[in-house]
Length: 147
Image 1 (cartoon, rainbow, N blue to C red):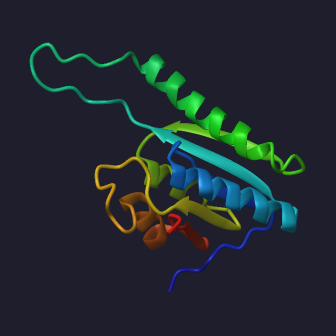
Image 2 (image 1 turned 120 degrees about the horizontal axis):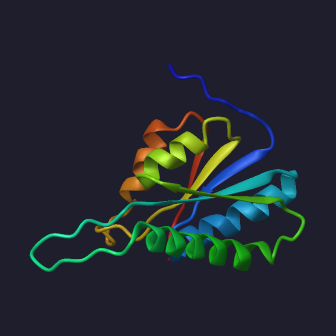
């Protein structure tokens, strides 16, 4: 059986700009405010692949800058409702699920939306959420879509 790490003080939340991740971030900030915890908002990006003749991809710096804007916009909007909560921002290149697992190693809890911007938008629970539930070493909360 895997030991669960219950380090006090830090929540990790996945942010991808989707409505689901925005709800997860809002939930994390409200919970952090009640328990006097800090939040680490995490956004992972991957360099896009292009196939076929004439296919182009943006420069890595452009992709990273766009990812930074997604993270900054989401945090700025949500944090305005909870000014007493300290929010750290973490931007990383890599697969979102793996980055979230790494970042939540010493977290009190990992919070993710139920569906993000993945290929299977109609899925009940997204692949990143599912991976996190199966592999995290801390409790994971999946914030569902509104009914």
